[in-house]
Length: 433
Ligand code: URA
Image (cartoon, rainbow, N blue to C red):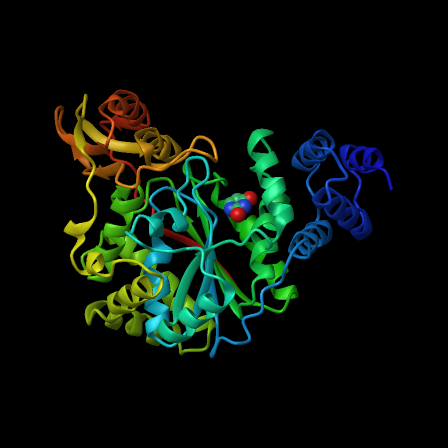
């Protein structure tokens, strides 16, 4: 087989066979195809798309490009939740301990931040001592002991995705439906979970900008997961504004702890209750209403917070921080961003907010960049709020005073204020079963 022919076929809008797709993935992982040819194929896929069969074949080829995990030593039903990525999205830190408290195991592999979006692994590593590099035995022991463990993705899991993602990131081919599906589901299917709940984000802070596209993406992932024998469900949720008020690693962990304490922001609390209830429902723990009541119960009696603290301790972290968030390292400097106009916050470019936090040190520009865990933003005003000129919209945090100028400019530029009250958009926008 020749890569030239595979590229030409897709460029001309023809359907690739299972054999061609597997050959291209296997050869690329072995280092037998250069990046420039793979880049050309990615661009052809971006423009020509792939049908369900091709997308499924690509997903299975990505899944099979490395190790498959075996969680048979984990006692009990296992459920995972995966978000397509957003700004201020700390839901995994909240829903995982909630469902674990209610008897469903969560053996979770998470990613690091990418571009303007944050990553669960970076957030957890802001807890002093927390280890995300457990070996397989430690990982399973922690899951069996506390009901939950969250680690980074091992290099052996779906290596094709690592290679393809890095290439997509620099060739403007991230926002391609079949490429996103195969990236997410390739990794998820290499893990050994019984049920998967997908949180498909939609809006200015996500890779899918419209609800229609997000629904199509969700349906594709649900179909492919079901074909592979998983119980699947997807929620379409809003990412036209950051989730919660805090953006940045330590700040997001603190907001997650507040939410597990029953003091979280309304949007974050609502989405976590719905996600957790759906995870429990899918795992066979009762009707949606029963599961929702159980979720609210373990927030109210603080038992989910206790599970989170147990996981933190079992993974080497300082659990005292969970009960006293003042123990987290604070940023050296803070800076208030004042509104320059009066009116409603009509809309925000959520990606711009993510980049504003990244500039402060909360994310990476290159893989080698070191994160400043205490850097980030606390929003005082969000979409729909009325602001007067001079009102504090947000407070920026960083160890480097010089970062505030660019970060503030990005935040102001990303905020549209006008006299018209925006139409309210709910946080949960759809469900695909
Ligand atoms: N998350 C992934 O893991 N892959 C994508 O392509 C997009 C979001």
